[in-house]
Image 1 (cartoon, rainbow, N blue to C red):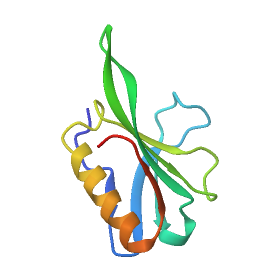
Image 2: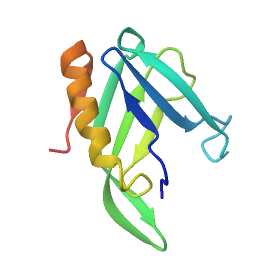
Image 3: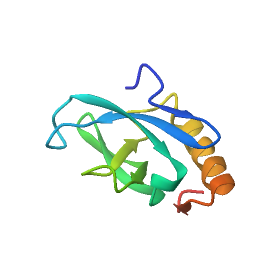
Image 4: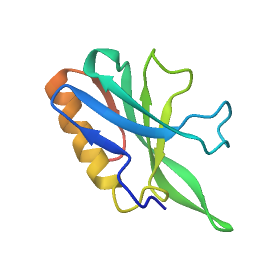
Length: 106
């Protein structure tokens, strides 16, 4: 679970802390500032996530940018106390800066 907030919003940029290893399973965290013109799209979609030995219904946030080799992903179970704040902040940020958002989890 997330013990601290990994996404901060400003009027023109987002500061994201994400796992930035060569593969998805390396746990080296990196931080990046993404301005509104460097974000290709944001997706909020339902997904399936492993919770212990069970697989449960969940949600996922995906941020795509040409500055990154891989997309940034946040999952609801891992970011539990902050996930609703992330969704609300991204919806407002994308609307005010005209960034494409695919919101399928309403």
